Image (tube, rainbow over all chains, first blue to last red; front, side, top):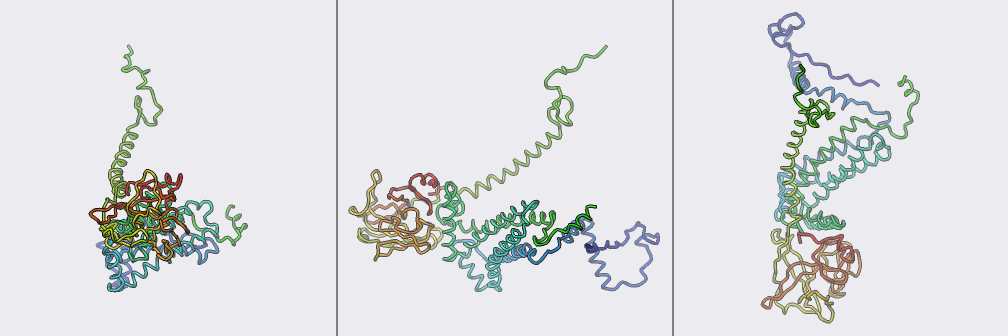
Length: 274
Length: 221
């Protein structure tokens, strides 16, 4: 298989005192024969900017390995479900940040601020709708991605740890669903969260304390909603971002699996070993 | 003339300890000491913000968050031993409507209500509408003299005892008293299936037999 050619090394303008092709100092060199066009200048400028970054970060070998890595034969659309989930998360993150600009996590103000987003804020209905339906889309995509991994056997050695990280990400996403459901603070979200917290309380010994932690006390109180908001906005997304990073690192490090219906090509393997 | 040794080589302080990179007599390398110190300092610095932060977040779990608050629900004449009268009390005044709840109140009925030895009977029976299954609000149906829950079909009899559905114990009640002819409602308490009184528990927590120890009463109530 032929890899795409790596980006060409850009040609830097020689610095003062540096030798260039004709043996003269760069700054005092002979002027170029033709005046560069605007396009040339733009391309040169972009290449210079990218080159400046690359020279200081050494990112290009990493990016080449990450973006142009080999994938097995038979890779198909099912392999895009993980990326789709990540884009669903990014969409939730972006719309969530904008919703936070108008939402007030206070038991007496939450409902009004949420309905204000829907009814008055410019495009508020769209952004809130994207966040609400995007949550469902993300859960669906996670389970489809998980199903792909399971039925293709992609959880097997050496990728077990990535399966475990994926399961933690699933649990965290469900926790996002739980904590986000309370925030509109209408009758449905209030009573659904009452029931959900009491389900937490049904665990022996630790359950009642867990419920107290979630409610910040024995009853839904003045800080319950801000507690859910902080978990929904800061704690769980932070963990999700960190674990997505680990998940992607392992995907790039270990590579993806071929679909199970593809037989290993023994002849080719043999040739490579020789 | 050979110089006398400066120190006794046999001393247990100077014999080699097998520590890599250590000079003679050293029990710990300089690098080891510096590494250990840096790790310890980092640990102390991390704990210095992590422990107070965790305590801050977990604080409500060990605090009594529901102060005793006697609330009047009307004169004694409003209530009778035969049927329940709905009243609204404020569990958490700070959160407005979300902190209010309906209770059902009737006078103690000596012919009907069980008296548990060692537990003073309350002058009024004030039943909480918080379902003992998962906390949805139950409603009293006068025609059948039953409390029913809209969420998962829990049914309770006249005394709040479970008669059907998933609830694990009778409906909670509140302490009651009469002050200057007016009925007042106090703290919540829970009951097991024998209608014996316990400190308040969350919905879904069993209270019969050994279960009461698996669902301990908490400092918050």
